[in-house]
Image (cartoon, rainbow, N blue to C red; front, side, top):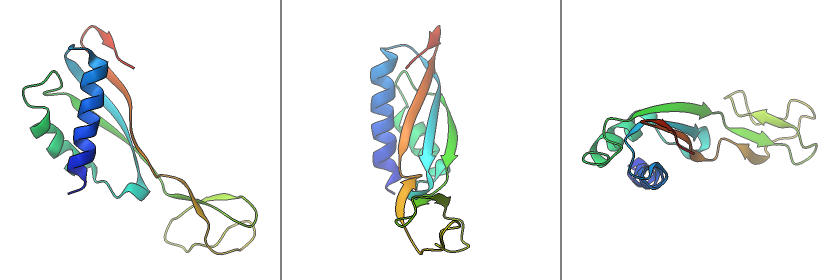
Length: 115
């Protein structure tokens, strides 16, 4: 249920930047490391946006894969279930290097586009 808090934060950002204009579409990037589920965000969005300028707005998701950066050689590689071994040097593990964020990338409002 951690999608509730992130959805409320997204809605707050969208309404602030829409400046009262009717919101038609919201482009969102969801990183794999976040564990957020797009369908859950959509369900919470429908409830939270009710009665606001974002009611009925379509959410469009772009999902960003989980990436690691090898501590030994700096190679960035996907965490894809085949292990945590660096494909370049063979070292195990690394530091998260992508797929950690959930962001509102842009909004589309009636009469134009938002930030």
